[in-house]
Length: 297
Image 1 (cartoon, one colour):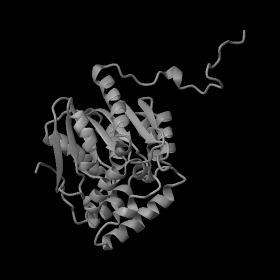
Image 2 (cartoon, rainbow, N blue to C red):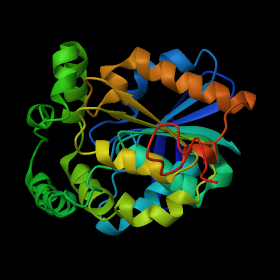
Image 3 (cartoon, helix red, strand yellow):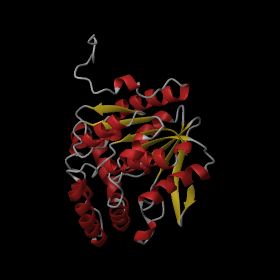
Image 4 (cartoon, rainbow, N blue to C red):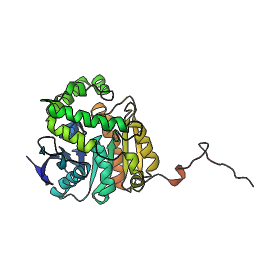
């Protein structure tokens, strides 16, 4: 099995296709298999690398809290690029992986061609922050004592029922894969990555300064992330925003064709040099859609 060495852990990855590289980073409840629909599509034209984060076999599952954290997750992603001798890649991430993609635009911009953070920002909004942190701590302690994750219950959360309703077979595959995750690894990731990373609202200055092309993608029924993505769109001149109708959190499963189309359109624009940041004239606090048509003399 292919692995990259990163800070005392072996990070598993799968590689398919040839061309410009795309690094896929999965969500908390997913793993490298979450990107099957994307890899099958994009590997026809791109070099696709899907990663299993530390804590998710076949990657190592370190036994101490000190071996997990957002900074470590950032460096694990870069370690895979280093191992494969990739100077710069497009990075596509969902939720936890989308947060890491944003972190890479801040801390490792020279290694990115672009970033697609999808469903990023859970627990960031000020109205949700305290509850999110409390639940991360409590749920991680419950998981540590469990023999197996309660994947069925996790799969019917308010932003995941959309997948169950749209694609029962895809939902079943998602739940079955989730049930295979070791509870100890999931607990440590939840407590030390999810539960200790900064709110995206705390990173406003850093996000405003990002120069890497960004495509934000969010579902209109993903209440944990919707407002945060609007916030990021407003403060990041480099960010475009796609809102998927009737969609929850697991966007690449829910709407694979639409998700792939949006990403392909964005990556193609970046690669051919036709992508551009927001025109400053579009970022005005105007009272109407036209702004001031006439000036007083």
